[in-house]
Amino acid sequence: MAGRPAEVQNIPMTLQTEKLGGHMAVAVSGIDLARLDSPDAQANLRRLLNDNLVLCVRGQKLAPPAFRDAMARFGTPMRRLQLAATSECDEVNIISSEDRDVLGDGKKLVNGASWHTDDSFMREPCSLTMLYGVIVPPIGGDTQFVNMYAAYEALSPEMKMRIDGLKVIHKYQSSRQTNRVSKRPEGEMKAMPEATHPLVRTHPETGRKALYLNANRMEQIVGMDRAESDRLLDELIAHAIKPEFQYRHKWRQGDVVIWDNRCTMHKANADYAEGERRLMHRVIVAGTEPV
Ligand code: SIN
Image 1 (cartoon, helix red, strand yellow):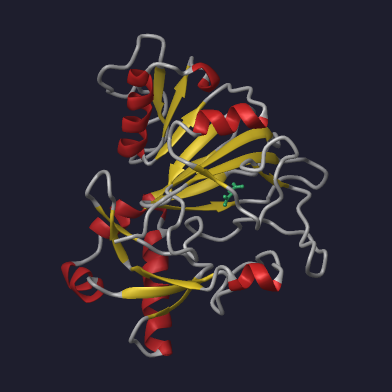
Image 2 (cartoon, protein in one colour; image 1 turned 30 degrees about the vertical axis):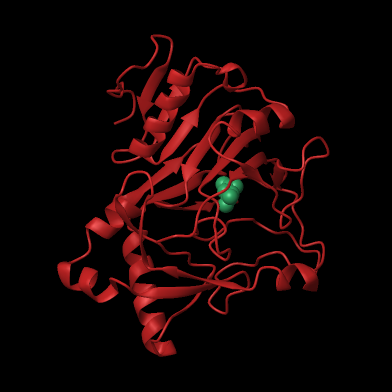
């Protein structure tokens, strides 16, 4: 419930927390991520993230190198060629309302407009994504999240048994994709062939099971005929994105939102007024092969 202080152990007195969603997402204010030197405070942020899946740190003012360095406390920042990078820092990508498909038809591109988890087309997808609201529109441009632990736990015992052990092929350009992804050079495409991941993964830090879906990148369930695979994937996606598993983040300028791709999906909304700008800086940190 918004406004209720979260119960957190060992948090320094200056760290104020506020539960954002009923079952996920917490906001922290009163800290400067660029100066968060205390290992205790860092461990507490990590615990908040593991418990809440989405962590928003309010009121930050971070140049790209400072943003990268602050996020490096959560893991190893990675470069992503699919998005433009800031001139100051290769590991800080730009997501902008002005994005265009520069190698394709030049049309406007809304990165992340359908439900997804980041980088599932890679063998070792990033574990966390950090998005920093540099310019946010006054209305619209929210990011939606779903809690994939909760979605898994709510499945019937029969469905859990049916999907246990199934694996899915994920591709950058999936034939099931639901929104346009930027066209990439041939050499780059060859360097990211396809990856096979479990449909249910176990989080390496919490030990909890989560559905692992990506509406835009999943191609087919291994060993299942195409029609049956499509039916099952569609059913699981429809289940996972039910409102009861969702949290919708309304951005404030200066928010740094960190989410865990191993137990969430998310989706961008380009529903702000024509002429409004939305500019985000983005860092991802390395992950491991899903199991
Ligand atoms: C993303 O999918 O990484 C970006 C989400 C957003 O811009 O809201």
